[in-house]
Image (cartoon, rainbow, N blue to C red):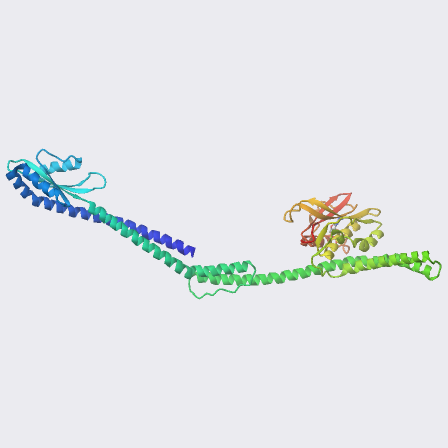
Length: 484
Ligand code: ADP
């Protein structure tokens, strides 16, 4: 609609401009015709008066002529009459003096007054001949006020016409513009906004046969294509999500599988303790306080077995959790029960620090899987008699570009005293299927899955490694508060 208004405004201005130029030329033409008519009329009047005045001059002398011309001048005539006796000439302009001189020479003269600029009057000099041979003149002066009045009237008419054209055009532009353009463009804008908001949009009607209809058809087609693409992309992303969950679950089962052989060994020690202690009580070898102490030890070992089995079961189950508000240390609580056996087998000390009171929000099982993958890698590279540390703290840090604002984050650090990571391996660390382990030993998925999980929780993993001294993986997560 605004375009229609602009076009109409431009057309109206153009029309008014053309009207003004043609009217100006027309007016000039009219003016010259008026001037010609007036000049002819003055000459006619002058020539008609000349014989009468000549006769009065001869008979009554200059006084009589003066008297007659003054009488004519004093009356309310449009033509002003004045007589110049011999030897007298007009003094209000060189052009008039020259015309008068030519009239004295015997030729009737008509000129405009003043000589330069916009003329105010037409002046005619007619010679009067005396019988004694002297020559006087009469001056006939006609004001051009009639011309100014005509111009004013014409300009008034022109502006009125322009105003009528302008108002009519604007009204038509608003009406037709709304009907033919504004309404339809409005619908198109509505359609595009709905598509932008991700709503399902109904195609627009395309009844008319004009450019806007072509645009509407193209837009309907585009919306339809977008709908298809969105549906396809939703299907693909659902499938991708399903496959990711599947892959993560497979990764968990692979970790469990690798740890399974140690499970029996893990359970062996507490079972032996339980058996020995309960036998002592059963055989009556201990009683009273000693029997109670033995029963308490047996109960503690049962709790340990329960914790180990629960850790394995929890870890192997499929994640059904959504985002949960939990203490950050909950992400590492399972490590001891799950990987303690593996660490002992490797003669590596596994130290898990749980003295952080910050909270996070997320899927605990997935986050536990991410940390487990880091600890399994650390244990894999740790030489015997060294230590793998898992620590939960908060740090003031600037995230990598695009991962959030600088500030305080939860940081779960997994450190080892292994051989460190080669600089050429570092850029590929988080690539899926990248492994430096022997065939059959590594899948190359542990770090890529861990990094995917952490990114889903708006965090990131940083690595610090030193050839010979070991590696630290730092898993960063946003700190959450209960309301967030
Ligand atoms: P995988 O353990 O199956 O090889 P990952 O994605 O977990 O797959 O690890 C990829 C590679 O990263 C490993 O093969 C290893 O070369 C390197 N890596 C991971 N953690 C460490 C570590 N703590 N110290 C040295 N290298 C490591």
